[in-house]
Length: 97
Image: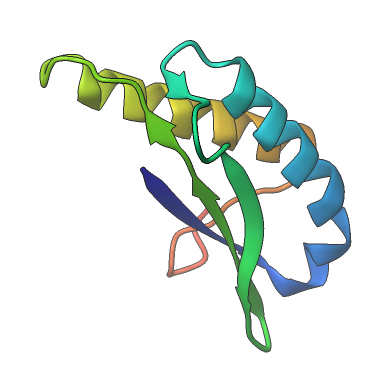
């Protein structure tokens, strides 16, 4: 599973703490497979006004009905972590979400 989240480029100084917290959250999630390749989070791209935070992890085998809930749970926990670090995510038209 891969999640990419745009963040403001001027907040990249917060990235190390966010990355550590997200990787810890992924390692403690019972639905994340910790086998051959551990979950990881990193800044994957930066431009003038934005950067991109990428999360990658392997999920344990679950039935197809549980998979969307597992992905949503990880995404929501990631958003909560960003919020705890002071990020306000915005829509493309700059409306807060």
